[in-house]
Amino acid sequence: MSAGNAPQGGGIDQITLTQPGDVFVVDAAGSTDASSFGGILATAAKAKGLAGVVVDGAVRGSGSIVESGLKVWSRSITPRTGKRRLELVAFNDVVNIGGVQVRPGDLILADNDGVIIVPSDVAQTLLDRALQAAEKESHLLKALEQGASAHDAAGILAPGKW
Image (cartoon, rainbow, N blue to C red; front, side):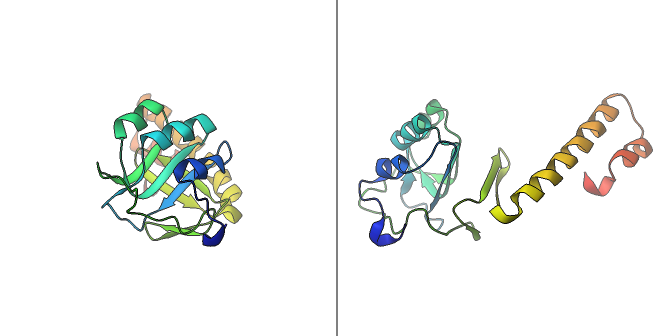
């Protein structure tokens, strides 16, 4: 949706246009001067069934976000609202998050260590390889828990891979 067709009702309108399981991605160009997402939107997003939110900028209402149970990744936290300070210029369009291009439909994976973006055209290949790697790592961890030697461990998964 281009700027001319962008939602006009603020964040709640944007959340209404998402689908359960979506990850809501906000490109605020890394700005930490004002929030691009907050506790009220987190409640709406969680109720809508969003998988998470990634903000290349600041969020506010972190206590409410945590209470909502929604997974949110952001560059920073601020008490300063984005109302009348930020403007929506596009919705469901290509954005840049931390210098990485994100397109609608891309796979977004995140955990406590950070966020990665996987282009949709290579997502299945990456998932297959990741499952294989996770299986080897699980085998390695079990062997190490049982006292495997460095030599044994290297036979399961080369040290350069861990």
